[in-house]
Image (cartoon, rainbow, N blue to C red; front, side):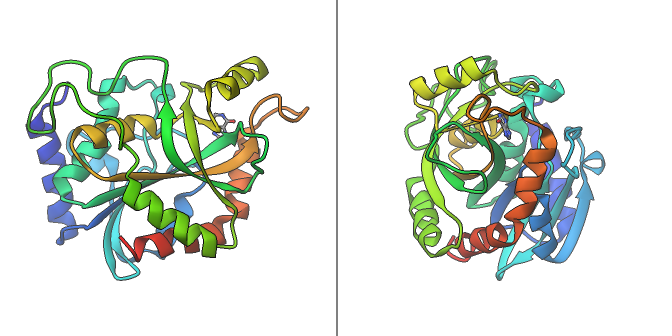
Amino acid sequence: MLCYEDYKQAADCILERAGFAPEIGLILGSGLGGFSECIENKVEITYGEIPNFLRSTAVGHAGKFILGTVCGKKVACMSGRFHYYEGYDFEELALPSRVFRLLGVRALLATNAAGAVNKSYKPGDIMIISDHIKLMGASPMRGANDERFGPRFFDNSHTYSPELRAIARQEGEKSSLTVHEGVYFFMPGPQYESPAEIRAIRMLGGDAVGMSTVTEALAAAHCGLPFMALSVMTNMAAGVLDQPLTSEEVIETAKRIEGPFEEYVKSILRRI
Ligand code: HPA
């Protein structure tokens, strides 16, 4: 288990290499790492160079920190995130948000690829996450609590910042993309869900399903870091259409909307 000093050491290394303090943190999801291309005056640090950091193994995830400026804002961007299905424990997945907290960012914005459970959504649509459902597994905050991050028992009613979501909704109206707001249902993967699981998720109130983001959201809520996440509907969830799901479809849809999605994320960044 990492302790406060371990996270601090990771953050200090990033700050020293970057030579500046970032204002906003970004975590880019599967097939959505292209956003890092629009970062100017880049400093790149591979995860392996950062003490106590985890290693990214997922396809479509580069595995590096990219620091620089976008739309005049100083950003620290994780291109490549960590997932439970890679073999990490939930407790280990608290790391990114805690490091962002110690970098001193005022907001953390995550993107992800997700399957559309809500039948009125279409591939290529965006969903601003309003809330999540995670019924399985442990919490990233399980185990000894460090009060320097947050209290033992912590609130989860504003995990997805209402202020940041309002900005995302307003910018969504101006975007060429179709932007919804809804509930993200966490599933552990790496298998895609069964059609029966998707029917159950729909009955339980999930609008989209994915294998990431919720651990980062919980760790951000614990340490009081304003958090927001955007899901790209890369496919209709299992059983909605009579066709198998593939990771190629996920990456292809993410690539298809890359341009407008980049513009959308930038329009939000300008206002944070
Ligand atoms: N299920 C889970 N994770 C996903 C999906 C899906 O359908 N699409 C992209 N990530």
